[in-house]
Length: 282
Image (cartoon, rainbow, N blue to C red):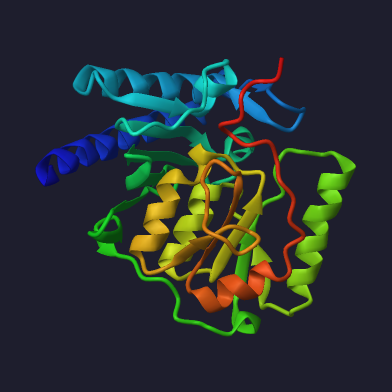
């Protein structure tokens, strides 16, 4: 099983790199960045998102025909978002589509792989930086082959916290997002940052660049790969109200340690978006 899993992970790294090349080439072609929208006018998708997801899924189907998939654009097109015990690839073809559209230089291909509903490895390729983040359960986390380790900072007042604002612009949701941001700034922390991609933010936690990342409104494909990268770099995951993390809940805190995570949780004005695995509304 060990060799089998490594073979699968090697393929994920190879296809992520191939997908990253497609993304870089598309940045030079405005037609490949033509914008369509999904749930709102700020929830963006491009031809390249769809092309990259197709590339990844077809490559995997050819090599591992029995595997299942959860892909951002497939779900947007109406496929169910259901995680079973079967080997499952959880794919965000372009994490940071808004960044991609604006040529903001943080765009990632994110691939998580689950067996028995547990993420076994994660691959996040930050395409424009040419940084390949990888982690396999029990084997450590790496960036371009170099080991990753979270920050050892335990004082949240000496920490940088990462977050994002999501695509929901309903007044009540926006108020809660800014309530959390205000509370955390007033701890006070050294600063708040956001790369515009959940996957990269989680890799920044794993790299020791920021102490924590939190968000309400993300999706399983945003955080599946990053979750194992954070844990294998020595970090912790939890729900925004302090319980165990549930990747389908669309709520997450990823931190360098439990001390910082629990302090952040105290300041988050939590709410519950519709779960990724919720049945479709009639």
